[in-house]
Image (cartoon, rainbow, N blue to C red; front, side):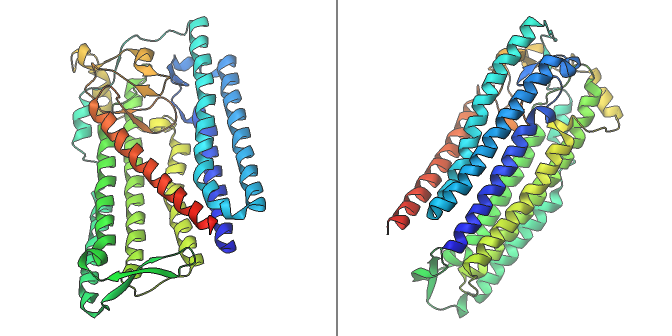
Length: 393
């Protein structure tokens, strides 16, 4: 157990460091025209008050991350058996603290915009003919998903091939020390569960990639053609990143299949080490793209194509203004949550950081949030209860 606690501590420290780094850098990877969720002229980026507010945010967020890192180490020294729970809840605590810091900065940014008279266009057109090109998905790297699906099929066929040779009773669960503690009769569902879960995950990741291509764009009014070019290149980069993550996750599921078949059982250290390795493999590419490209690729320097110029040129004429109008800051609650009944879009680019969000005026958005929240709460509840019972014995 001590060896596993050490691995959990390493996992906790890595997660806190990565999250802390991304959160600290968030104001610098966001578009210059989006200042803590408030739309401002891009020329205000170097304003002393804006620079000061970004430094305040970064300082407080970095201090919070350092404090939680210290708390994680201290808890490991005092109560090592609680390390896994710390790895579960400390990152959530960091996100909560960062959210409170952000809200303070968002209020300050709104005040600065008002007092400095940083005026922007009242209407922003983001859904144009480019939306039709996005929905064609011509740049989507389908090969990542085809290879992943093929691995799922191979794992399923191998499982079916060895099924007749398996004993009638199989180990179905192992404890933290990788000692068998539950058995059951073999069944087709049991031996196929990993390939099936992997295939469902592939479909989910593919849907996420398709959703990214359909997301409403945050187009900079100062240079819309360049903004479209950056979006185009950024979507292509992130699409490959999502495809790579899908393949890595598929390999993880397939690698667990021999355990399900009772053909091979790794040691606890090997299992945790493998999970850490694959987790880092999935984290590095999106972090690198986020820090290098910025939000929606605003730090990239792509060549502007004729399509980009066309998209920029037809912004006011493609659709009626009522169908595409974004009432600037009023439609963004706290600068983070988009709520616009006049906008048919479901997915939108967020105004802070580099991720996508939802239009909460759509019922489907609340359905998605509800499902994700229910799954997350249930997972945390079950894991917490099991760990507390284990520690009580």
